[in-house]
Length: 170
Image 1: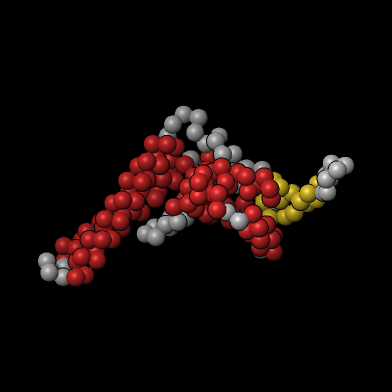
Image 2: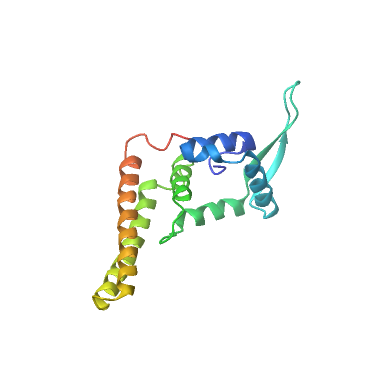
């Protein structure tokens, strides 16, 4: 979310909650600040103090460093199937659109290509197994999971292909 613009921790948490919908409700407020601290120690973000209002203390404003911008670009390019974190991939699409770093539909396409490659490998392995093989049953389960993930990616593509999508949750 910092790829779009520098922000206060509170504002980051609110944007994450909007982007995640009901899944964001369970987010611990302290986790945002712990994560920002880790990112700062890793040299991926910098923290500056912004003057507060007379009745409020100064606030910390976080911004990506050049190394942080490079890490975001690498994160957007990662293909992390067969065990994806769906919430992370959803945030990747939202962040890419909000900061105009990448086209969410292109990110979906990259994930789809990886899933199709893996599905093809699994299907070949299923065909090589004897009919009564328990390993064949496991491979069938893997194939069904990959097919479900492909259907979910189709839903992602439908949503992110709509005109004007990407400015939400920003």
